[in-house]
Amino acid sequence: MTKYIILIFVAFHLTVVVKETISITVLETGYLVNGLEIPIDIIELRKSLKAKSKQQITINTDVCAGPVELAQVYVILQELGYDTDLVKLNAVGNLREKECEKI
Image 1 (cartoon, rainbow, N blue to C red):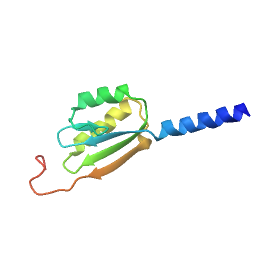
Image 2: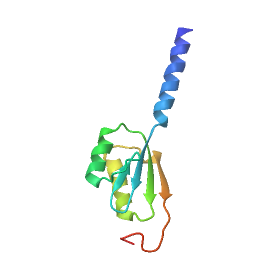
Image 3: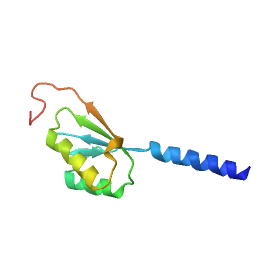
Image 4: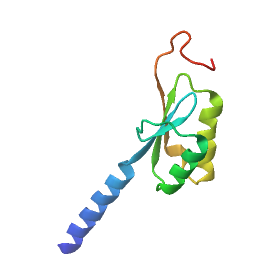
């Protein structure tokens, strides 16, 4: 009986660990990790992701973010050994005239 209780506990614990995600918001001029309010650059993003365990990633791409900024995130994830099959990509924001500097 004790073995079954331990097995159930371990299975529940593993399920909780898998459901944790890292959220990266790609902005026009920087990145936000897990909802932080201060944007960071690509070097700080790499350091932040290197320090975290390999979890599911959600990339929220702002409408003003360019393709280079998004591609840099994927390159970092690949270099650090993240499973890019677990990446969810979302678009965020509304495009308004003269809101984006690069577009």
